[in-house]
Structures are given as structure tokens and as C-alpha cells.
Image (cartoon, rainbow, N blue to C red; front, side):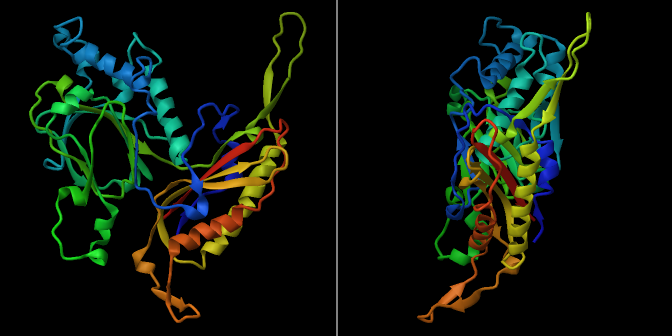
Length: 395
């Protein structure tokens, strides 16, 4: 089992630092109670009803360039550089068909110069809060009009989680034929284990997710998925419009007391000389990284004797700011599945003679719990609690 968690001491030294925990509301459950969750749907995070939110501003810019229902009924006839960013993407003999553009190119507009940065901040924040992911690939914008689709495929190499943010107004979704994201249900990939002989239809084989405005969909890209063919709209403003990409390069990060950096004025020169502010890494950070590395090493050694799993698991630790003790150990995101090639079957029996089957997922969670729960970190200088997030990728 290849486990990607890298050298924590080195990563934390270059990690994302934040001394504010505003809006830090991750969805977490105790680590040993974690269950796999391959699809995450959030309709509130992007604040779709707020006109100042990045998704609302992005849609407004799109309508300004391509819409006909605004103040300028001839907006769709305007010949500007912004209108010509789109590529007609038809690849793999119909495997992928849509209009697409890099979000950085399309959202570069003098009327809202901070739009792209605000959008990327929102995507990164979602990844940190809900999935324990600290980085995302540069986003794309795609528009699906009549005939556009993505046929079923997988794209696991891009990152452990894919995401789609809809910019499609609900009134368009209500009349749109097609455009749903199709994601195969995990049970279908283990089809014969629970086969009962009954017929199944599309809704039992796939999750179908409508592109409601502002909806933030993230999912395990190892699952076969696609976009149902759109039929009807010939105008871009009537099509399925989405921002999409992947959360990639999982790395540890932390917020709170142990994330603080120290600083002191390095220059106190005479007349005309400006003081230079020089930041120094708090010594507690290096100590915390070393302690975490030791705990992870112990957990990795324990994993060598349990069954293999594949997928991504993001673990969140809360460290008491005063005592340095780990007060909670939770799972933020969990797409782990047992490796069927390594399944050992019956590994023992109970006193009553009942068979005990290997449970690789439970063994991995328990090994991490035992390796991390009893760690003791230094107290934070401010006394503020610290939240440490460590993503594990099992390959």
C-alpha cells in the first residue's frame, strides 16, 4: 500500500498559514466512525443569493457579454476580446463536446479586477473546510448548448477530488433537457456482491445532480462520471454554464495558535531609512511538525500490517492551546475503499465460532487514531487552539 503524506516538517514550514478561524465550519465526524462519502453537494457555501458573491459576479459578467435579457439587448453581438475566449472542444470522437475557456482568461475584466482572485479564494476555502484539501487546479468555465455532453469517463490522476460550481440560473435548469452530472454509484462497481436478480434503471445506477445556481458539487473522480447531453438551447445564456477543476497536491496545513508567526523590526535606521519588518517562524511550529511526523511515522508502520485501501482520507486534529493535547480527531473527507486484490477474507473467528472478516477500512482508521490521538504538542503562545489538517492519499 502506497501512502502519500510526505514529510510533514517540510510541508508545514511552507504550509498555508491563517491566524483567523472565521467561517471555519468543516463537516467532521470522529475518525473511527468515519464512513466513505464519494459525493458532496453544498448549495449554501457560495452564497448564490448574494449579488456580491463570486458566483453571482461571474454570472453577471457572462450575461454582460453573452446575454440578451439585460439592459443591452444587443450584448450578444458585441465583438470584444472577452467574447472570443471560447474554444469549441470536441475531443475523443464525441467523448467531450462543449464550449470551454480558462476561467482566468474569461474573468479578466476591468469592471471587476478582483473577481478571479475572489473565485479562487472561495474554491480553496471550500476545499480546506469541507475536504481537507489545500490546493486546487486552475479552474475552467464550460458552456453546454444543444448537443454538448461528456460521456462517461474517469479522471483520477488529476487529483483526489473533482469539483463543479454551477453558474446556470435556476430558471434555465427548470427547462433544460439534460445537463445533469452523472456519477456512478459506488455499489455498482462491486455489482455482483449484492446482486439480487432484479432489474435496475438509470436512477439506481447513477447519482444525477442538477446544475442549480451556486451549487458546489465535489466528488471522487475515480467513479465513472459524465454530463448528460444537453438538448434544445442554441444560445449560450440558455445553456449549462459551470466552473470546474480538481483539488490537487494534498498537503498538511494548520490554523490557530501554532500557526502564528513572530516578527520584529529588523531596521531602525536614521533619517530617511525605513524600518524593515522581518517575519520569523515561531519555534513552536518546528516542534509541532516534528511531533506530528513522529506520530505519522508510527501510524504508517502500523499500516504495514493491515489490509490495503485506496482513496483519500483527510484527518483534522484540534490541539488545545494551553495543554497541547489533542482534544478531537475527526474525518473531514473519506473516499477510502478496500483494495479487492488484497482482501484476505476470513481472518479468524469469535469465541462462538463465528467467522471474522478482514475490515481494512476499520483497521486503517484505528491505526491512525492510535498514532495521533495521544500526541502532545507545545502550548501555543497565545493560548489559542490549533487545527491541523492532514490529507492521506492511499494508492
